Length: 543
Image (cartoon, rainbow, N blue to C red; front, side, top):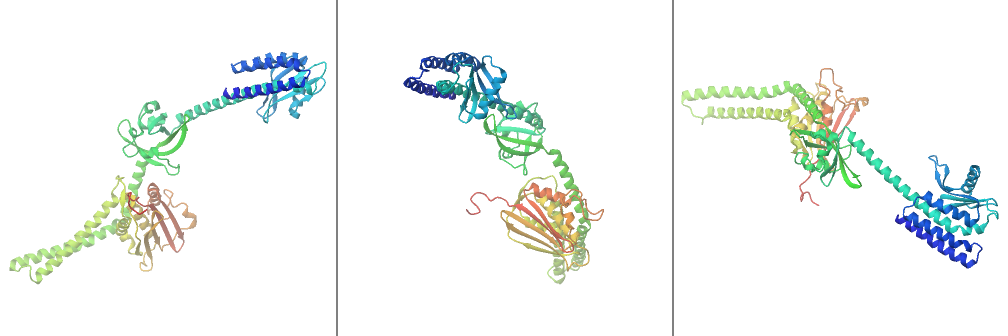
């Protein structure tokens, strides 16, 4: 309404200026100027007080006809159809032949200027560059000329200001209605979404849909409103709902179910405006069952890898056990004989016993190390992450896979100085053991000295890069794009599960890394694993 008042005040100033000009010019129209100004003042006052435009123009039109000596007339607003075609909405009129009305309107619309003839006068109501209306009068015995147009300028300015204000108010209401409908549609959309949606501001839930309530075991979304985010998640998981995340890299968040159990959610968090204020929306999907299935598949793949290595591991254990038992039997015989003869351990026979004991201890330690490696690799269900020495994991995997490698190739290690990575040791072990076994199985038996499996590490732009390169048969180009698909395998039937590389890809993605492969048939294959390094504590690492 302030804008309308401003427009009306401007119209009054223009009218007073025009009134002064008319009085100064001693125009024959001066006799009616006072009546016109009085009528315009009344109309403007009623408009500001909330009067309806058709009624106001209905009062103004008779004054217009009387002062100009016209028999008929109209005041109308110019509107547009959805296709952009202009049309006239008459707000006040006397009887005018419809064909004459249309002709006059079309003439004004076409020229955009006053249309003057002996029988009628058409005047455009223009606000800036917009044509907002048309005033038309007809049937004046003296006809129409520029003098009539000059006399009516204050009226045109007033009508134009009123129509401009009305149109502005109409647009404002339309915008508010569109915004209201948009907000309703948005609420309906998120309420009916199958995904759990939380909208929160400053750590407090302001809206939650039914799916969000269902995710946490509550009766409805309203029961979550006003609750702190920290109450809905396991300790330490709040950041997953607060920190923005791209759709391509969602957070994993542990939610608190109403019944006390944990619910694993995959969450995308983005900023938005809600109810006109900045807020954050978190969209969550329950992946608890999916993770359980993944764990079972990973366990199956671990068991398959252990099955592949079983014979070799048994051989690795059998060798140290054999000489350990042999040495223990030797020591038993020697100690019995020495006890019978009264001979002490200081002599030559005692030295042999000590040497045998040392070898037995070494063999026992070798068995302990093998069992330890097996336990590290086969440990499942422990999802904890921490600093992991990636080179120690590679050494472990090399030991585990040695029985598969040694008859096929030389194992060459080329470790650069790399920092720890934030990971799960068992998961990394499964990843690299799978790559080493694949590399070994890509190399035929019989030429261990002529083939090589090369394992290297390096630091590169905030990442640890591990490369496993073999000199095996290579992979056809048409298969490279399928390598990480579940159940795809290039191995003979009955060898492997077809899940190994798919699981490797999942482990790497979960750790925020990536894997790349290059291969040339007949020359070999290289897998490169890129893993983010463990962030340094504040105050370390220079700067």
